[in-house]
Length: 306
Image (cartoon, rainbow, N blue to C red; front, side, top):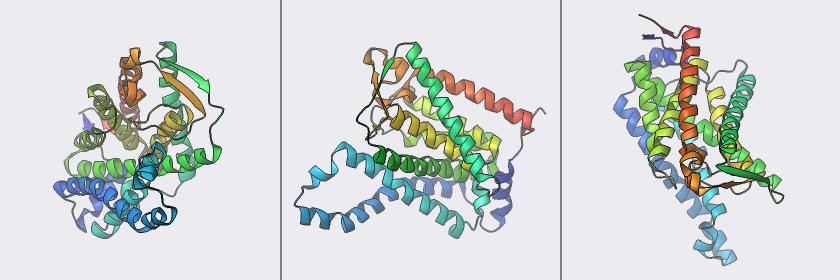
């Protein structure tokens, strides 16, 4: 099979004359960002929050070790990461935003399509879990609408940040130098490694994270648009966490429209404490999506027979 570079990959390859990205360098940048992001956040906390603790006489553990504050802290890392990714891409590698898959043409339409795909995908997975009686659902009458909107914005940044880093940056650099298959696989491996330390993480959860790294990689390869791919990722997470009350890669949200009861006896199906992404239904669904997207790439002419 021949795998043609999509337009953003070609742009990455074209711009490499300015400063050719080293594969090892890109890898270390990826690792450095996920180590450095929390450090920067910690410094900001020290500057802005410690005075608040002093004046309000609240204890550090009381303020920071609640579920709400842990969730907020995990979300606040992503704007910092996104800022540094874009800065490194522009100032260090002298690459344009188009090389990451950012295009101005119909970007709002692409974002809405991506959001719809993300919502539809997780709803299908959830309905399968309901059919197998692995979960039950009730309306949450006490959800906070204001917090829900804030969390939505957080997920929009979080999903986009991960896609810009793993697909727009890592995948495009690796693909432009070593081929599309290598780029998609390596970005998916990095994506899975990033989730190893999440609460409730186990073998099937990491396998599923790798599979969905392939899904998002193929989606970006086919669409050539980070707006679409980032939206799909963001609204998959938001619908799962803030709408359906399912842990998102082990992380529980602070509010949700529905309340889901996950039956521990069927954790092989529903993923247990990691969330639906740790269950066998997501494994099967992810493989089906990979096949569908691979066929779509063939139809588009990106993948051809020798």
